[in-house]
Length: 495
Image: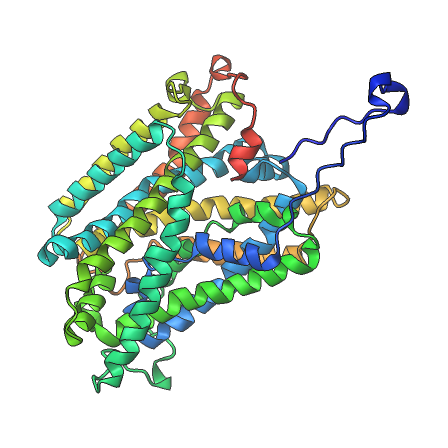
């Protein structure tokens, strides 16, 4: 955010400046609504969830569109109003709307969800990388655990050195590891059907809705909430539009359309090629590529596509690695929420101690892959826990938005969401329903012990999302506050 130049009256001008031409005011750097839509698409869309939804075949369209309407749309419009009226990101929004402890809980959940996000993301990397080396490794829990630990600690080493250019790597990852492979998969999938091969999943109107098998059949939709998460971070750009009231909704609807295409078409392509009962939730994309490349005599391309997907995922991990933890650090230095050990910076100004402690927990979680027989089950459990923790933050955000509209109706806002209370009601209800449904074992979960599933998900989501921040808050001390180095907190937390 540019700091406005200090204004001087005529009397304050010095004689030697009288003949000097006045410097023109710095123009606001506007972006087009199309550019914002593309930025949003690049930060939300991914091929990683495609195998999860390919299990449902044609019904994946329904399972993607519903959460887009009841979750993506409310979070986008509501966070845009909050970002255009209150700087500082979710901590300031919830602190102003509810309370500072609630604000800490919100920013904690934004950070804590990454603890389970990295094992699930890197589990996908491990399965994809297996197709470059040996496809049999894709189902090996030991291989998956090793890849998670090596990749994470390498990422910590890179981030702790303050390496620049990571954001550019992630931007390139959208093209290299998402758009190109996704488009290729869809084209090859259609060619696969054009060769006379029968679709592995039925593509009739009767299959537009998922088969009803009780509440367990709804559980996969929970994972799609995480697929659409992160809109509150993109909302900070609403102030860069010339006409936010008109242009931001356009950007959101365009990005929704693009995101849905990127999510739905590759998932359908996978469902055409790989039968649901053979589909791995982590390696499903590579399974599909392997089949079509064999069909067209181009199996040598499988490792190349695998490397492209791995590059995109690792680039995304690096951009997420330091961001949420940096926001938590700056808020804690100002308010004293974390002990001094976790607030220390290394010589590059990076919160290395937080990353190391987070890495220790990630290592323990990674080991679960080695002990859970089915890698897909482990991947699913960690994805659900990630979603549960993040949903707590969204519940707080929707409540804060309603309270801020009522407490400060005349507060300047660059954008006012239409029917804010209704949007918040829909978003809150959908988030709460998704959070509760996440505790139900999915119909595809094959462990056979629902009690263990519920205990693991509840322990991970409620323990990490509620108990740990409560303990930090109760243990805080005045000596933990460090006002120094807190400049720029608003900018970092808002990213």
